Length: 165
Image (cartoon, rainbow, N blue to C red; front, side, top):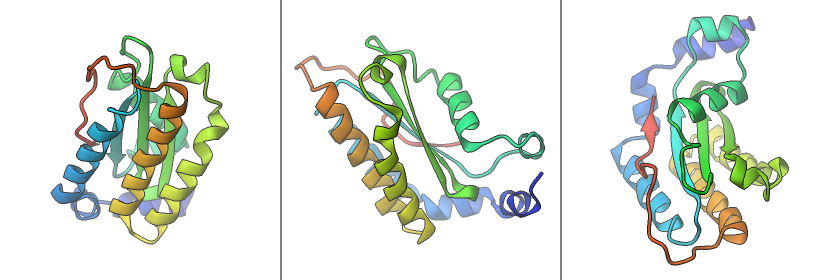
């Protein structure tokens, strides 16, 4: 286990997570997700996890591995067209992962998300959490709109409200 990483996670508290993502920011993210889903057929779920458990850190769990677990746990895969996308933020590490369902993976290369991730992480490093989150939702939306444009069918299969685990 990397000691510096353990210290970052140990020092992270729910209070710090709520300070980074207060209700006003959560409301803005929710509105951005709802608006973005008018432009495409994807379903976006935004999740912030303040820190990993000691067991997860001991096992050297990566942000990616945890994002895949959360994707499954929240059933982001459970959409009619398999177009769910998880934007996962591991706050203690300032890491962002984007996990897309198999319907999206068929048309969007994993590397296409890199620009979105890098933009978000740059904002987060400077503690500009609202800007980073909104940039992430916008970037994901632009990619989804290119590959899965809206077709006029209304539907909202996943909650738009971001979640702090």
